[in-house]
Length: 244
Image 1 (tube, rainbow, N blue to C red):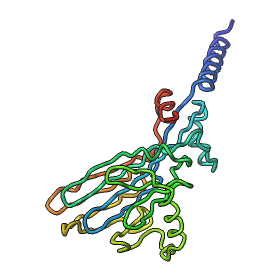
Image 2 (cartoon, rainbow, N blue to C red):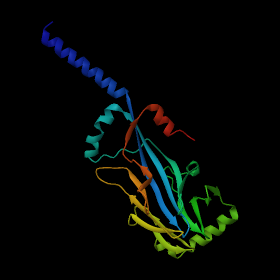
Image 3 (cartoon, rainbow, N blue to C red):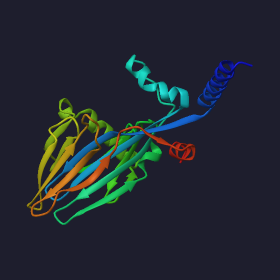
Image 4 (cartoon, rainbow, N blue to C red):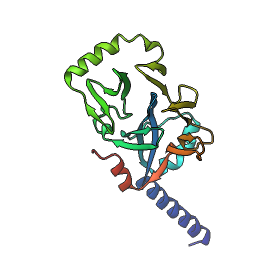
């Protein structure tokens, strides 16, 4: 058998094996994202409310290698999985800050969280569909039916709906939505100056974050999220999108 034929046959076999491996092995990709970010504050405290979601892609390795080329042609791949993964509250006072990882994400019917946060009678609420939760110092707790009815009626009649991204001094509270308003917020909590800076999406991509600045102290990152896609193992992928 000619030597050239053997070389060509070997190359064909290797290529065939590679195609089988690429077609059968799978790549698992996860991308985290900010679903909602709001800042509420009054004269004594500030609440940074963050909702996070995750997209997942389960694809063959061959498709994974072709993805940059397909994107360049304008083909956008829909996620294989998506879910609301976290709703957290960071409470700030003139004394310090506390982080509360709530269980609110478990009740989301929307994979991108879909919670609407609002102010009612001096308290902060989370609303999703017919359900309502009230922020109570360290957690969100379900609001009673009577309170939900009054909330809906009052909310429908609100006159500040023309300004959905911000408001000032309503029932003593002010609000800004991250990404929809200027990124720097200067507050006074019990007379002490506090500055928050929201670092949004950039190019090249860097983690988005919220930075806290207090007089005489070094700036502190109180929250950050890397929205770049990352490869994970199958076990990590299944854990990320398992029902909880």
